[in-house]
Image 1 (spheres, rainbow, N blue to C red):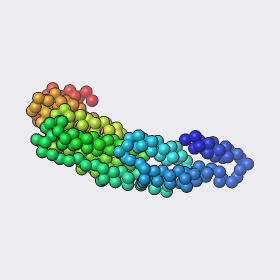
Image 2: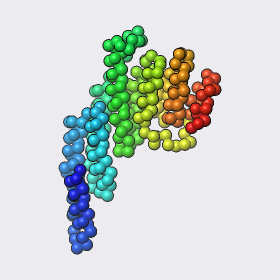
Image 3: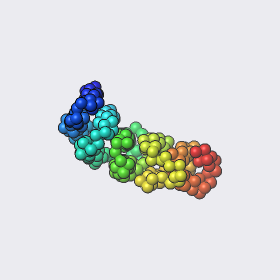
Image 4: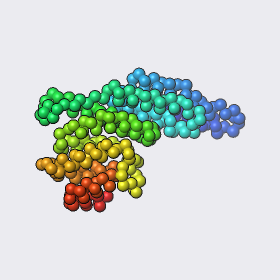
Length: 260
């Protein structure tokens, strides 16, 4: 945003002018942000932004970072506007979860054939929900961890995506979906090297992984069990992974945990 830099440069040059005792110039940028930029962003969020659109979401995040992070010098002046903007973003994502996510559940006989209309529709809806999951977690660093975990994990993952995974036919497709979910989780949630169990909001996801691993170990896809263990390790569910390996005597997978 070149105009943004022009105002910033003007403001800085004014602040360096020792002859100017009036500090009104340094408030120009915060006034522009409060009275023009933030209201326009809020209008965009409420009436135009589609949280399911990754391109729109990334663009909005870029603008928000510029406004809310780079101008931390004026935190007091823009704090109310910042709160209003973030509140509108959270509200819009809540609405998207409530209105746009629908993953139908069919009898296994209806989705065994991957080319059936039911199977195709269920798959399309799952990946649409997962796309929203990813876009919500892109706000990592701008929205608090509590907010992201409430929206992304409790409202979307646990309420919709987990149910779909529990009703899916065991196989590589389920592992692929679980891998994608884990890949979108912010790494900073798992930075504590002393963690042996994952964050509480992922308990249902962990149970899905363990159930999938058990079913896979008894099927022709037993080699996929290692991938499931790797996901458990990624989200630092070490205790659950070790217990599973011990209980089902999968000694050949112990090295997966030791390598971490």
